Image (cartoon, rainbow, N blue to C red; front, side, top):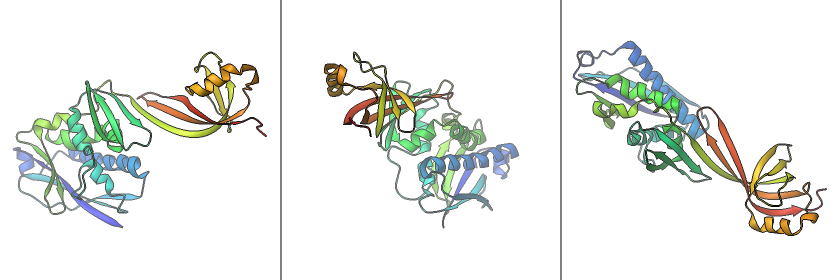
Length: 288
């Protein structure tokens, strides 16, 4: 089992922080916020690998409040810290860590997040700007629980305090990340009106057409082997032309092998899925 130590530090020209004191409610939320950040990142990146987050005895640093953490788990599971941006391990995340991307969003309303197929990157559309980053980072950056956690960890403890600074420190107390109070508002909860996430995937399936339209690629419907029915749009022009020329020979209960593109759109209250038949790759005339 591997382990990595890190700390979060709050500094300010404030009588409490100078004397190593912090409001108990704020501190409790900050610790829970770190836990939530790592839990969501672990579920997103590692499909819920076994890791343990512990709070260890703090080292007292003059004028600061420091919380020491120890994360234990398989070496690959500890990668979550790198994606969040609180790891000193070499190797930056392409496009930026979670902390860097949330800072770049500047608490603006996110219009949509687009992830296409097996692409490792995603596009975040915000206020007329497109930000390209790692797909796992993008998912976390627009996750309401993650944003609430970042608010509790970064913004709440330093907001409004004179010369306040949030820091992430490695096990040698070297700075990994520094965020000043003037930038703390970037780590607010997710802006109202956000958001919509779109993912595109492709798969090859076998299915029957249970509804057809000889005049259009729209209005078709398929039934999979498990009995699931879905409305689809057929965009295979060669197949549509062949069907149009041989209407009487086409049987809607014939079995076909096809490549389907699935566009899944996730919104805060619901999710929708659209299916396009890109190519008919095989026609099983005798389904027996």
